[in-house]
Length: 343
Length: 211
Image (cartoon, rainbow over all chains, first blue to last red; front, side):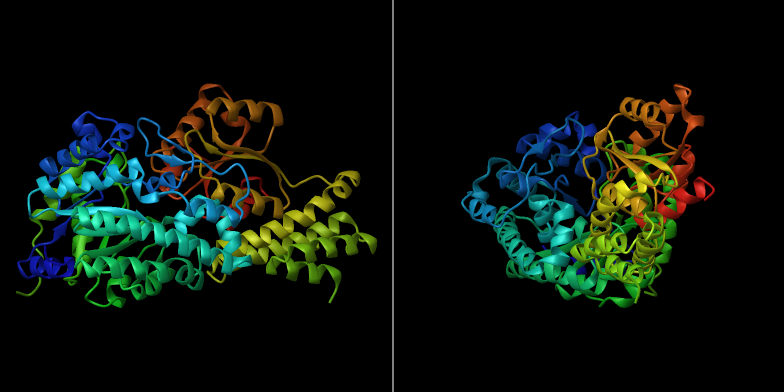
């Protein structure tokens, strides 16, 4: 399957847009399943994401967004509420660097839940229509470090003991790369690095603990001719340059409610990088009606009209309660919109 | 440089041991506890808040400053109590039911403490009932509710509704915050205020209490 930027350019030359909201949990409703079941069983998981492809036919369909996969595979306590994504519990004791040696002994890449995500990707690749790209998520190196040692402790360590945190992030990167290799072997067309905790860092810390490590994940993806996407939640405007420097193929950015200025980003990043975003996942599409969704989507498409390197999406994953009619309105508006590309 | 100026500087730099040392020095020099708080810690944390809002520092640096301030406050608190110095307001803070993410809540709590408030931390995953029980028991001026997830932000509304249904809403100001929230949403659910970050939370709390 072609690279994302080539597809975006090709769509643009035909006055169309790639359309792929960050969809996952809505499939649970469609398939009559539960998040807990889907996040623990690959057949159920596949049923959920398939239902989304059948109904909405996005250009990329990701697996369910789940930041606990790698952390859980490293033995961290995780809870699985039926209708919420799995969550890693806070450690009840302070992390010591000796814990890293214990974590290294875990056969991370033979964890059954992690492998269930790999199997889901295999099923998606085997069964999805060829025009739908199969997307997989991995945790970001800094976010995974924060799950292991505690988010607050990671922040403090970044400032007080950066060399220790670098070691922990080097370890998390090794784990993420093992997982990424499995996902690539399973047939993932796109790997998206989820680095939500990265938004708390300044540019130099972000570069040191996240972007430098993401560069290694990008290299693995590129060796298989697969796209790598960087996703940072919240206002990531101060981190754009560092994200670009990591060599990723696309940036998935949060909504303007978080002060992300997509136009400014598009004006400043190289044209070979696809900008993905950024309708708010917590406002109109959840609480509004289809007409309001259509208006907001059109406004966003108009804003990005002159950029070929753009894919219409949401700023983050859509919550379970998103009305399906609103997602249909999003897709329909994106598909019917005629880009004025001058062709 | 006076001991209080030095204290401000070290709060901003996040130098915990130095802040503790300077607090002790200020007390030894016979400075009034209230003066140490008002001319040392509070202006130090105000600088931290401003630098954060202007993207000069980020969460790690803010955490260091907040921890340094907290360590100094621990030493100072008994002297403030002894001198009968009242905090400028009392606040109960917690993340709502289902939400276990506390870094934002903790930062807000520390900044509020640094702003001269008494803060009672209800912790994470707090039910509406527990918030109501705490408010009845502790009688705070403000309740701060936090949610990081899109899946739990609806619970903030449930807490506010529970306060209304139980006739407690008029007794308290409610401030909300967290990544998925917006000012529009906060108005829609009937909160008294929304804060986009920890630094702004202090200004908002003061404003709500007319300080």
